[in-house]
Image 1 (cartoon, one colour):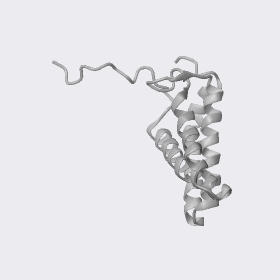
Image 2 (spheres, rainbow, N blue to C red):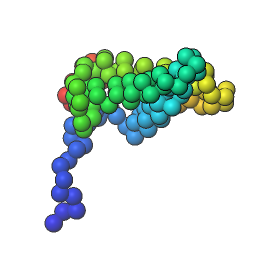
Image 3 (cartoon, helix red, strand yellow):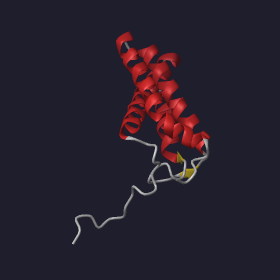
Length: 134
């Protein structure tokens, strides 16, 4: 009897998505989800658009995925579209951090963004090529 009787979910995941690239991408997503709506609320002068911004920032990466990139796929999108969604989150995270957080926190977010780009480059090249099967 084996310890795991569930399906093997690793066979359809991008070979270029490492623990480091996943962790930095998740960190940037969290910052975008917190700082983005906060910056929108500050810019508008009211809290009411913040939930709408949060829905967009959470919904885009959750719904639109490139087949073969993750174990689950919502709405299938080409690799370049996925890159655009992730770059939107990166720009939102870094820009919003500079707008609403102290300088030291914005510098940390910027360093996280650089780490995201460095660790994620092989995956971004793969996505840009159309996420071909390997």
